[in-house]
Image 1 (cartoon, rainbow, N blue to C red):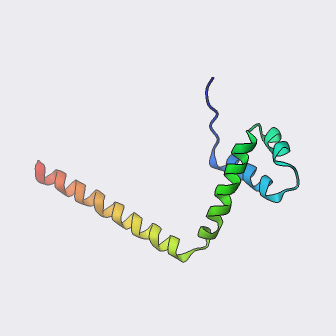
Image 2: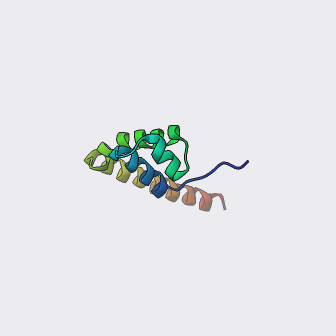
Length: 84
């Protein structure tokens, strides 16, 4: 039996339904054809990430990470040219 794979939008939709708490987790899991534990895990992940969405620190870290990646790529290309 092959494992099911869900995209981010689907996971977010399930997590938001669980967060709304208008139905039980079992009802939501049944409706979306996922295990209740999985729905709970997705909810937990969303709740952990919500504060980071509006964080300036996160944006700075993301920009720094992108700059570092760009620098790494340029350095690798330069190194490759030197080897030729």
